[in-house]
Length: 42
Image (cartoon, rainbow, N blue to C red; front, side, top):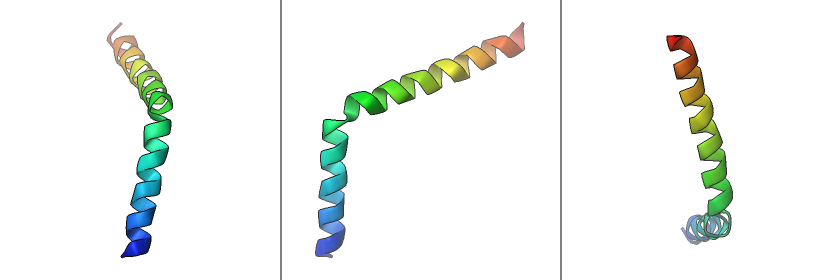
């Protein structure tokens, strides 16, 4: 249980430090999805 808890805390720390990079990747993925959706309409 301690290993699982420590792993969760480590993942939480990584997300706290790199939340802007995750947001950047999500924004790029969303823009590509919207672009492909609009591209299929025309």
